[in-house]
Length: 345
Ligand code: NDP
Image (cartoon, rainbow, N blue to C red; front, side):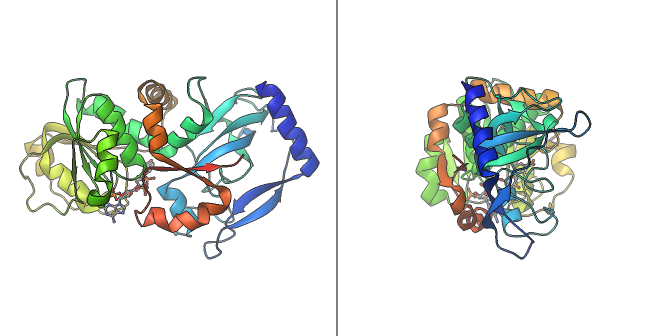
């Protein structure tokens, strides 16, 4: 069935020889919908092999907002943005899952130095593809995307290197109403932890965050008033950096850990060594671009096992490709709730 669908997709593509893509020609140009020519030459037999995919869904992430608005140092233009995608392999390539396979790509350089997921077709480096299990449908995988992958990576880091286990703990999540934050709140709550959700939109998003499983919602965190403040939680997932991350470190309990993955507030970190040397707090960096294969597989396995599909759907808004430029500023301004999936059917 999948093979038949893939064959008809490639036949249709050959007939049309063009496909729709959102293209950002330069940092200064606005992104535009264009018809691009489909290159169906077979992938080289070895080396940097790429698999040709029919894209089903992409999604909008903070980094996509940066690329779409032309932030410096994030992408090489011209580029088709879209740092992640879910689709079907329509052409065999070395080291890639076979033709007809359903795959996701949420790691690597898509949408930055390689053309990305805001297109009906995309060539993806074989080594960046993850074969999706039958239990995770295309929409759910896209709703997870880079944000959900990163949220689960933060949790696995806290477990592996920070001591978080099945004993119920109190965990703070910053930027909680955003993509990574929303997924972190629901995944931690589902494991039985008490989640404190910190959001700049605490008042308007309280009901949403409580529905995801938060026990308490607090506002945006300010710079700490002292290097070591009263302990408020055992662990933290920080999606925003800057003063809120410094705040997390000053209020994290002894032998606790903070997983840091984001810079939505700032790339700066003003702190002291005291949380580390007097409380043994661990600061764990999380990078979703180049995780080792073993870590990538562990993240997807846990997502497949732990994700509440209904809650995931409730966290997600779906938009057509043409609406992506409209939402780019919103994500950078912290106005997007949860996840935004881009439908490329
Ligand atoms: P979103 O925009 O969906 O979420 C970010 C959230 O941060 C916002 O919703 C808002 O939440 C909060 N926020 C925004 N601006 C500020 C500010 N100035 N001060 C304090 N809080 C702010 O983005 P994503 O979920 O896609 O990404 C979250 C972060 O994680 C980004 O910085 C992104 O670059 C990073 N990231 C890193 C990855 C990695 O590999 N390390 C992978 C994926 C993402 P609220 O309103 O609730 O406060």
